[in-house]
Image (tube, rainbow, N blue to C red; front, side):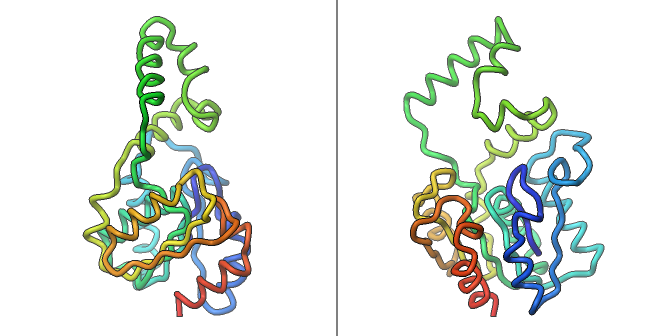
Length: 219
């Protein structure tokens, strides 16, 4: 089972799909609102995306699957692994999100400025505040995005009993190494691998090395 990152698609795992298909039956899909799937009809958070993935697995009668997820897909994976453990036999989570980022005084100042400006000029605030990724989203996806990024999934970690391997790029700035270490420390028996020279997309930057780690873990 493959779960892609935010605003990506199942094709982002092209190298892994080709590799895994030689040994396993691969199930991959585009999350609603992303890739070639239909737009969202309501603002979904991680819980709704996880429920959607679980419904697909139930519909296909899949149990004990090996799971590969990236970034936002890792958020969904953490929820599923903690609530529906029978669905998976093990999980490899690459650049997994879900740990709250460290926030300094500069960030808090920006939030205060945004809230102040929004009271008097909401359109200006929406256009000029927030990440570049956020500003490109349509209104409904913006609401979904805020639900997703503001959720702390740390409580899920202690409930995970499925073997998990976290794989991160050592130069990842989207989900930095401190997040990787927090995930591994909070997940019983989890392994942690840092890929040298890689950023947030280690599975695409060094696919041969990533695939070798993936196949060894899945065996």
